[in-house]
Length: 66
Image 1 (cartoon, rainbow, N blue to C red):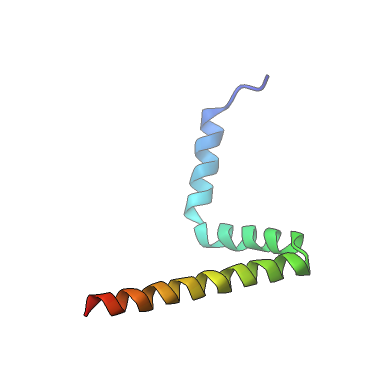
Image 2: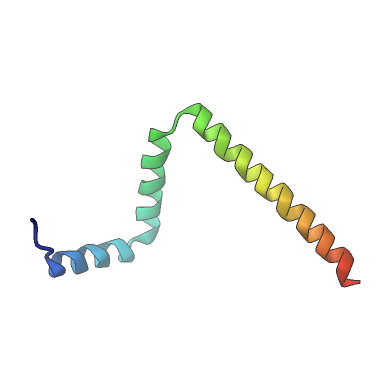
């Protein structure tokens, strides 16, 4: 069993939080490379569905405010 080195964890966390933009970019690149075309299409379809639902809710809530 490996014992957790707290100093290494803290150092890793500090590096990750100092360069958040680059970490996010690299993470998304890794995810993108592992996805196939059908996965990407499913994600876009889900996002479109969520956007449509949100638009409907916003429209309905605007009707009840008046």
